[in-house]
Image (cartoon, rainbow, N blue to C red; front, side, top):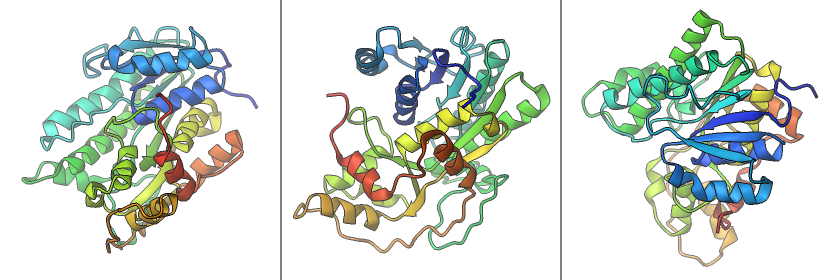
Length: 331
């Protein structure tokens, strides 16, 4: 299969120490690419570097420290010599102040585009957006999402008194992706661009903690009810999400696409049922009536790309939760 980027090339992965970023790096390394990661703190990524170099070789991955993705020319050095870029870095403070979240998110997306345009060797850029750039979960509401659906409601709500941090985050992802596509239409870069819109990621974890959605499952497994504050929504296995990012990077058919990384809708009662099956007798919180996600999402192109490059579609919820509840990879 012809790809946009030859094996052995270097791919820049921003936010490499994050939950999705670490899995994207793993899939790239497994496919025969070198990874140059970025992290706000190199020390934060060191255990990941050690894990990958022990498995794929000393020169398989390097990490550059970029403490502020908003800084002018933040990525100009990091992009030198790379053939592809996967941009995952994001503002994850969940601040309720839109000015602290939305402008930096937009700047980060435009900075990576600007840096990529200065590097003639770049052939493909994939930017991680979010399901929240299209919609926020609304239980029992039939929402029909199209490929050009934007979460304008979050943008309107973000500047109103009493807004919650998750809505501000959704507004930031909406505005960042929208401004990215506007800039692409105007600047017409020499490389292809795709965005990936993932919903809740569950599955294998490299390490404990990290403030990721994978931690929601572990909280439930420990008998906590914190995740129940989040409404029923769609999920995706984090490995499927990472594979989709790689497929979008390598496949010319992904150019110009918004790829919806939505596997299937779930409820927390579904997750609890799987956890009870895994550990019968363990005391967990009881089921709650939270409704269900009835949204319709255009995820067909994303799954087709996954099947084309990896030979399988979405991983089911039960297998995903089993992986999530299992031991971390970095001991």
